Structures are given as C-alpha cells and as structure tokens.
Length: 134
Image (cartoon, rainbow, N blue to C red; front, side, top):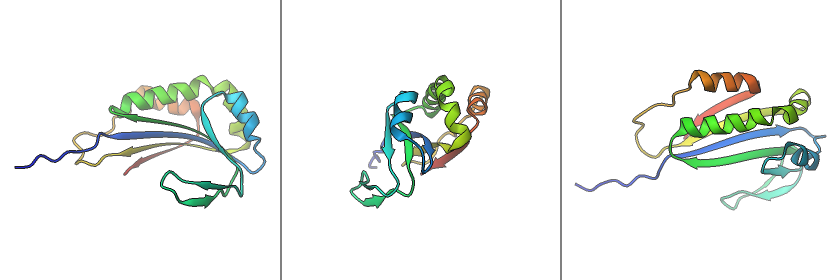
C-alpha cells in the first residue's frame, strides 16, 4: 500500500484597507506593518504570473504560516489589535476586511476551533471577517 504524501496545511491571513482616495504611502508609514500596496488602475502580476489591473487603491497586510491554524490566527489578530490606535481612523473612512484562508490538501481530521479569545479579538477589531477553506 503506497503512502500518500500531503502538503502541510497552509494558512494565509489578510487585512486590507481600500478606497480610491486612500494615501497608501501614508497608511504604510502610519500603520507600520509589512504590506503590499496597490493603486487603482495599476498593472500588477500575480504570484502565478497573471497580469491584472487593480480595481481599487488598497493597503494590504499579509502573513503566511504552516501548522496550527488557531495559534496563527491568535497571533495575527493580536498584531492587528495592537495596531488599532493607528488603524481606527481608516476604519471609519474606508472599506476594510480581514480574511483567513486555509489550504488543506488532505481530508480534514479536525475543525477550526474559534475560542472566546478569538471572538473577543474579532469584536475588538470590528471589521468584516471572512473564513475560507480551499
């Protein structure tokens, strides 16, 4: 019987602020997190080599991890909560969202367990949160 070799679980976390009049360089300096920035109408190339035109101006924080999703999510939410005094002014004026994407190429053996701490952190941030399994 051949053993099937699976890739480790991949976790991706995104926090995005977007708006046509967003000053992305100022946001980058003020918030102080590693990020990618995009300007509306700008041509960019995706990780898979596809050229796209940005539909909006946006600032996007991104983190990646393999392994335990719950620990990764806690860390990322704590990072965002720690930056809330600098982010709050953007929440009122611009569209914001957070997204956790989990890639799993094996049958799920366990589920994602959101703790009371996760829910409190999500509430403290107060923006749309998207959870996607791929």
